[in-house]
Amino acid sequence: MAYLFARAADSYFQAFIHGQDSSGDPSQQEAKQREAEIRNTILAQVLDQAARARLSNLALVKPDKAKAVENYLIQMARFGQLPGKVSEQGLIEILEKVSQQTEKKTTVKFNRRKVLDSDEEDDY
Image 1: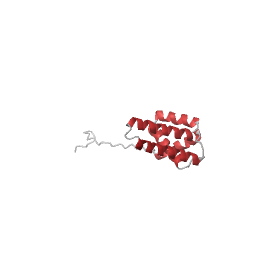
Image 2: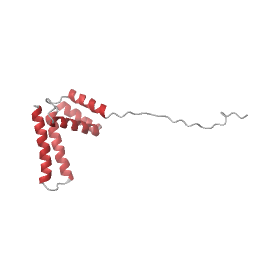
Image 3: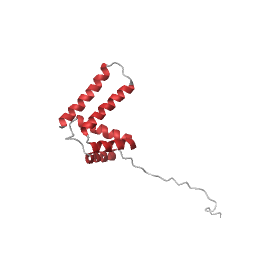
Image 4: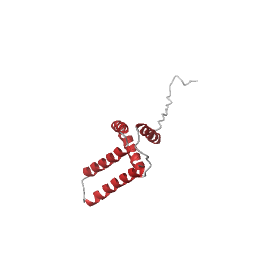
């Protein structure tokens, strides 16, 4: 099953590359639309319905994170690392992995200014 996903993903990307070269100079919008269709086809083969719904909800809120997860899933499918369709729980685990890798650590540093106050100084 994983072999079929890998072959399908690879053939879609090869068709995309060769289609772009043979058609001459397609517009950027057509190329983006074709790429989106290929991505959606691969993701439809790799994810079950609940996982696709969760990923589309994530894309509405955090498009960068959703794109990273999509790229990760497509890469896994191309190399045959997915044993079957990814369930919602499997997608949650992948989201946690991606979140850990892209986690930003926030640090707050207070710079306190020393103000010269006439009350603090002792005049002798």
